[in-house]
Image (tube, rainbow, N blue to C red; front, side, top):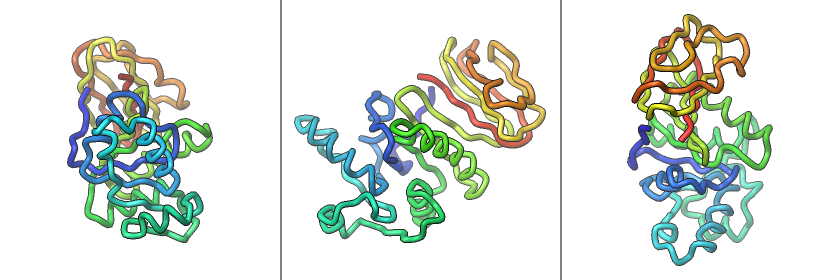
Length: 218
C-alpha cells in the first residue's frame, strides 16, 4: 500500500493515539506536525512512556491549534510561540487545524488520531474528510491503527496487495465501477453496501462521477 511521504504535514487529532507502525512512522517522519489543543497532551504522555526511544523523543509539534478549551495554562505558556488560537466555535479543532495548514500553503494533509474514544466524534471526523475535499480541494488521507481513509472524487487507482480488505462508502457518486475487486461495485444507496470487499491483484481502480470514500486495511 502506498504511504504518503515526509514532506506532507500531519494533523494529530485527539482520538486514540496512533500505535500501529504505519501511522506511527508517519508521525515520526513528518517535517510539519500540527497538534489540536487536546492531542498535545496525548503526545506528551506517549513521549513520557517511551522516553528511551530517541525517535519518539524527537517528535516536536510545529503548531498547536484550537480554541484553548483543552489546553492547560501551563502548556499555553510553554508553547506560546507555536500556539494558534481560533476562538470561534463554528468549526471543531480538526477543521481549525486544517484551515491553519491551508493558510500555510499546504494542499495535502495526513491525519492521525481521528478515531477512537468517542464514536460520534469518529464518525464526524471521517465525514469531514469528504467535506475537506469538496470545500478546500485538498488531498487528504487519515491513517488509523487499522487502515487508511481516502476521500475521492472521480476516477482513482490504488496500490494494494492481493487479498487486502477494502470498503467503499458512497457520498453521492454515480456510475460507480471497479476493477480488480472481488465484488464489482455499483451506485450504492446505503453506506454499508460497499463494505467488506477484497483486492484481487496488486492494485485496484474505481471509476465514478462524484464523491466517495475508500478505506484500505493494512
